Length: 181
Image (cartoon, rainbow, N blue to C red; front, top):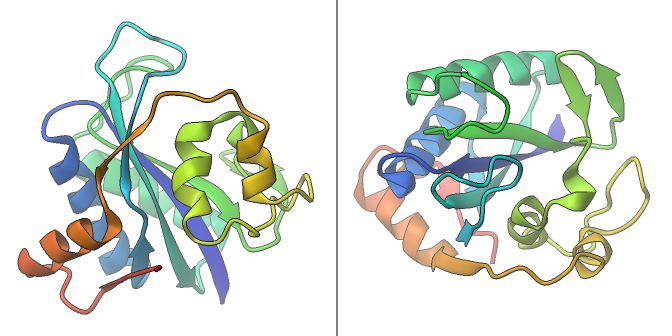
């Protein structure tokens, strides 16, 4: 089984609900997950769009990277994602950030995510799983990569504990989401 780290983002509709629905579907289709806090971040690329809520999750799975990619594309669609153009606003975006120690660039899968080292909105939630987690392609820790980026205004919207509690109270995640703290 491999440890897989996924990045999640939403900037349309009820962003917390979109992320929660995504985590619920990930746990149902790929296995139990651990979640980070939710961060509010500014858009990258197409900047004239609403701000994002971003988070990360960790899971252990027997699925291979191509099966995980297929599952997350279906999950994005189930939460209402319509792919219109690159960096378009979206209800849910799920990316494979790190897949064990694998380094793969075979479309549609590229792991670790090719722009992970440039994206504080992915690195900050990922660092909650352990700042010493190492980027397989670069050999640098997530904490090192994050420290190299310029400070961006980012705010924790919902702490890990509060998000876990809301997931559990919703009933669908009971026993499936655990704390990384």
